[in-house]
Image (cartoon, rainbow, N blue to C red):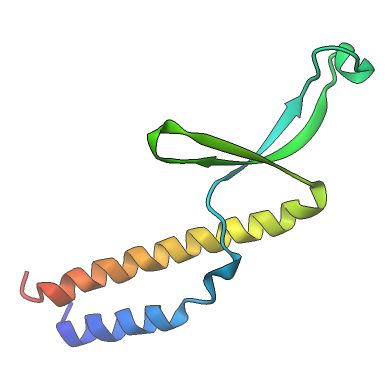
Length: 104
């Protein structure tokens, strides 16, 4: 790829980035929560279905946030926005490699 073409494509990708306000990093998990005692549903083996956002941090730390059913669609959209933004940034980085070393 030529330098001029790489710069043009990089700038086009950079302009395509929307507002980063609606992004979210993590994984959406569907879990079943079971109480140890005092719950008839859990005593019968049923448990309670729940959506959880799981976020991993450096050092092996993990945070889980319970998601209300009505928030699930929004969380899925924000997670998708994060992955799209990340892919766009990776593409820009690859193009910047070409800009730095056009002859390689």
